[in-house]
Length: 453
Image: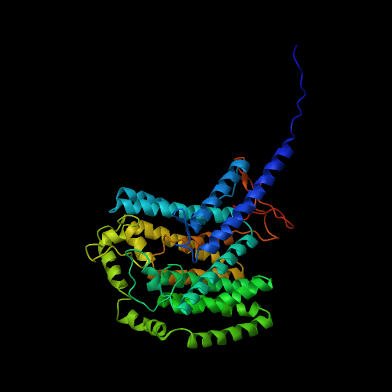
C-alpha cells in the first residue's frame, strides 16, 4: 500500500523574500565590520596583534567572510565601475611582473598585498551603495584618526618618543629621538594619514547634523594638526596645509555659530603650536625649504637617482612589483624603498605600470570634478593632498591609498535619496536599464545602477 502525503509547495515570493531578508542582515553586519576596519586603519597597522595578525586583518577577514556568505545566499553583486577596472588593471600588471622580476619573493608578497587591497575596494563598493553609507565610512576614518592623534599627544605628554617605541622592535633603529608617533606607526605615514582626515572633517561639519559628531570633528581638527606637528613630518605638514584648503571652500556653508567656533579653533591651534610643540619639531619642519633646494630630503634624492638609473635598463616592463629595493642595492648599502610612489611604480612596473597609475588617478580627478559642489571640493582636496603626500612616501600598496580609491569610487556612484535606485545583478540575470526612486522618468545613470525592465 502506498501512502499519499500531501506536499505544499513554498511560494517563490516567500523564498526570495527570505533570501532578501538574510542578505540585508548580512549586509548590515558586514558594513559594521567595514566601519571597524576603517576606524582601525589610521593607527592599527602594527597593534594590537591576535594570533600573529593585527586586529585590522581579523576584522577584514570577518567582513570578507560575511560578504562571501551573503553572495552565496543571494547571488547578488553590484556591477563594477570603470574606476575598478583601472584598479584591476594595475593589480593584474603587477601580477604579470612575476615573470620578469628581479626579486621573486618580494613580487609575490606585493601581489598578495594588492589582492587584499583590491578586495577591500570591492567591499567598499558592495557595502557603500548610498551616500549615507559612504559618509559613514568617512566618519569612521575621522574617528580613527582622532584616536591616533590623541595617542600621539599622550605619548608626547608621557615622554615616549617614536625612537623608544622602535627600540622594542628587533633590528629597527630610529636616529631622530625627538619625534613622536603612536603604536609603532612610522611618523611620516602617520602625518599623511592624519592630513587626509582634515578635508573629511570639514565635509562632515557641513553635511552631518549630530552635535556629537561635530564635536568629535572639531576635536580631530585640533588634535590632528597638533599630532602632525609632533610627528615632525615635513611632508605631513605640507599635506596638511593642502588639506586645510577645504576650510575656505566649506566655511560659507556652515552655520554662523560654527564659523565663530572655527575662528576660536584657529586661535587655539596657534596657541597649542606655540606652547605645546617642542622646539626640535619646529626646527625640523623649518628646514624643509633648505632640504628641498640644497639638501637630499633625508637621502630621498639619492634613492630616486638610483631608481631612475635602474629604470634606464628596464624602462618598458620594470624590475617587478616590490623589487625596487633589490634593484638599487648596488648603488646604496641597503634595499631602501623609493620614498616616492610615482617613481616606485615607474621603476617597478615600467612605463606601462606608470601609465596605468596615471590613468587611474586621472579618472578619479575626472569623477571628482563631476560631483556636486561640496563632494567635488572634498575629493579634489583629498586627491591633491594624497598626490603631494605620496611624493615623499611609498604608498602605492598602503591600505590608506586603496581606502581612498575605494571611497572615491563609491562616492562618485553613490545613490542619493531622490536619485536612482541601486539594483544588483541577481541570479546572474543581466539587468536592462535604470529607474528613479521617487520622481522622474526612467533614465540612464552611467550604466551601472540598473534594474530589469
